[in-house]
Length: 180
Image (cartoon, rainbow, N blue to C red; front, side, top):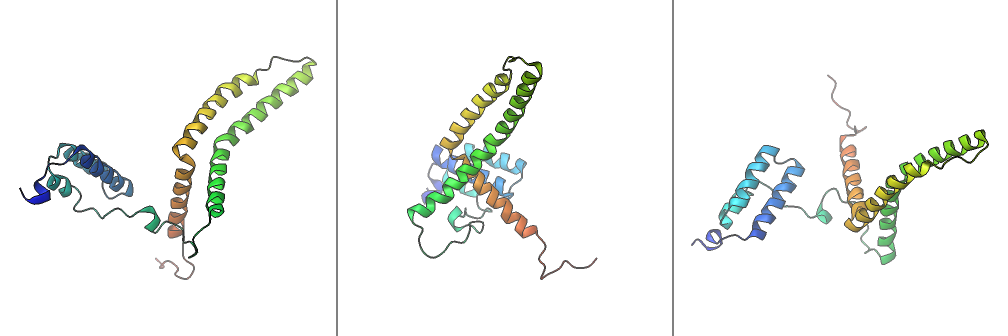
């Protein structure tokens, strides 16, 4: 045996390599075809050497806290209150994105029902419940699973990445693009 390289890999080792390959695919370092080939080879690998060979041309993963996309913070460590406020804002924004379209549509259909009831001078059947009920139930399940699964934080990270990409693509006034 050649030390570690000749040792047999475990299922968790294969899964870790598969996760790293998925990250490389998401980063654009691998195309879908190459990712699929490497993933098949990862799950068929028997030794560490076979697994390591799948990652040799990929850079190591940079933790989010050391990523260039993470915002620059002050040198002072944040207090507990400072951490809760941004998280509350992220959660509130996510909840607004999920529920505001629903609330707007329900306001419109209830207004239509109220106007038609007034014009007919009779209290009509409250049909907006058929719009509000099922949709509201779906949103309630989505909200519960989203909050339990950390969806607000994922959306905030995705939003930060998009903003960083826009900043990189935005023309710099100090360095105008070359004339054609």
